[in-house]
Each structure stands twice: as C-alpha cells, then as structure tokens.
Length: 131
Image (cartoon, rainbow, N blue to C red; front, side):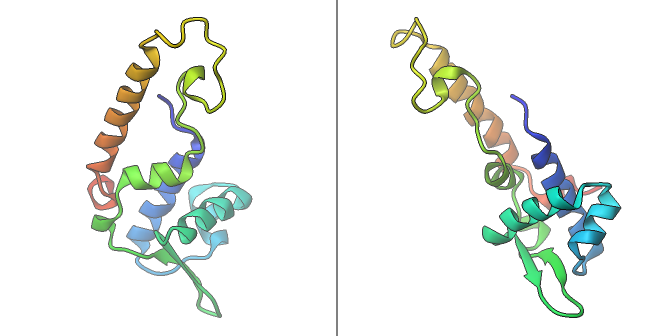
C-alpha cells in the first residue's frame, strides 16, 4: 500500500507545529517545509475541519495544533487525508468488472491488509514520531 504525498505533507506540517509550539502562518509553514502554498492550504483546511489543527485569526494569527501531540494519532491523520484506500479494483465502489467475482478471495485479503496497516498507524502518535 502506498500513501499519497499529501499524507506525508500533513504529517510533516503537524511535526513542525508540534516543534514550534506557536501558531505559524500557512506561508511560513510552506516555506519551512519547502511545500507549495496551495497544497499546504488544502491540507491545513482538512485538518482544521476535523479539529486536529486550529486556525487563529488576527494580527498574531496562524495555525496551531488543536490537541497535544500525544493525542494525535497517525492513523487518524492518514484517514483524513487519503481519498481512497482501494488497493485493487474490486474494492472501489461500483467496480465489479472482475472475472473472478464473487468467488475471489483477493478482495478480503486486501481489506485485511489495509486494516493491519491502519492498525499499526493507529498505535503511533505525533509525539512518538517526533525527531
């Protein structure tokens, strides 16, 4: 299974904010992590929406963690950012073109593998992965 680049960016944004301990603007986050501002804004918006990040308005505003690093689980972040966990075609909604369905056991195996992958990520917190 491969995560998309946005998950990597989201985790690095969270690590930066945990290290800085003060609100940072999207511009500063993008600059420090060498990310495109547009990508940074999209990721931050998703994480604010699910209350992993807080957005502070005003002159001294910016983005900060909504929770302590030990309360932010990597698996939760990945679930928020990843659009699709379908590792094979038959896991996609409405895709039933496989010649081997319904007898094929591949779909069940891939569901089990995805669950194991996310279980490992759920055990890790932001605090645990900080350098």
